[in-house]
Length: 209
Image 1 (tube, rainbow, N blue to C red):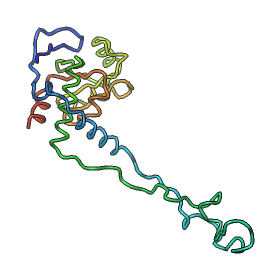
Image 2 (cartoon, one colour; image 1 turned 90 degrees about the horizontal axis):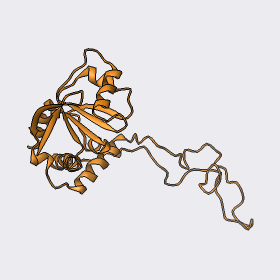
Image 3 (cartoon, rainbow, N blue to C red; image 1 turned 60 degrees about the horizontal axis):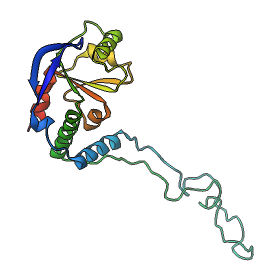
Image 4 (cartoon, one colour; image 1 turned 45 degrees about the vertical axis):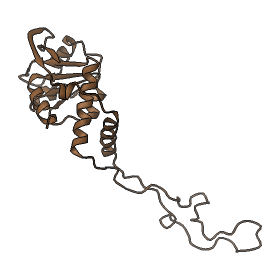
């Protein structure tokens, strides 16, 4: 499929680029997308949750009442999970939520995400640009020119561009990543995907393997 190349002022440069059908035109695999997004979100979890169990609660271990004759259930100590202030039964313990996925599935998930965005016509191809110094106002002007100031957008750079990245860092609705940092979650979480020309070759090369 073909896409027009715009400049950072939102004007048509008169050039077009060919987007690879093997990356931007496949039939999306929803299960692969689900697994990759699930892995991404699982990796964000710290897993430091912890509840005190019976052996860890502070309190006496003395038998709090006699075994028989009280008319109520027997009880051994105040740390019994049935009592207020007692231990927690089967409470959460520190653990890792991460799990492995093979490279082919993750590659399929990213291609599916790109294809979903292409079908929705939510991909913009932008000519490469740079800022001399980090400047949030300049980046906001680019968003306005592309009519993205009120939408979630993801700018994908061919290579690390520190000034462009720093210019976008204060904006909640927009983010900038290099083509090697792309994730399925980031692609789908944005309303619009802005691909700089230099990123296309890297993306297609990495996903066409």
